[in-house]
Length: 103
Image (tube, rainbow, N blue to C red; front, top):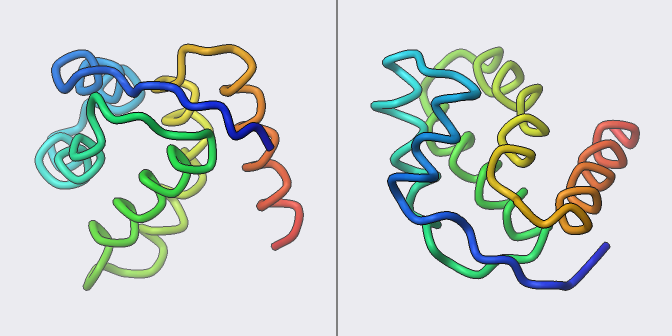
C-alpha cells in the first residue's frame, strides 16, 4: 500500500462529495459530521479508510449491527469520492478488496 500523502478536500467540498454518494438526512446529520473532522487534513490511503471506518463505528454505536455492515459495504464509494489522486485511490480500493477477501 502506498504511503503517499494526499490532502482531503475542504469541508464544503467534502460534504458535497459525500452527499453525492448518499444524501439521506440521517447520513448528513449523523455520519458525515464525523467524517468531516478529517476535512483538509493530509492522509495516506489507509488513513482515509480508517477515518471512514472509525466514523462508521462511532455513528453506529447503539444501532443494530446490520447498520454498520450496510455502511461498511459502501466504504469503497466513500473512499473513491474523497481521494482525487488516481494512484492513492487505486491503492485504497485494492486494500478494501483485500480486507473484504480476508473476512
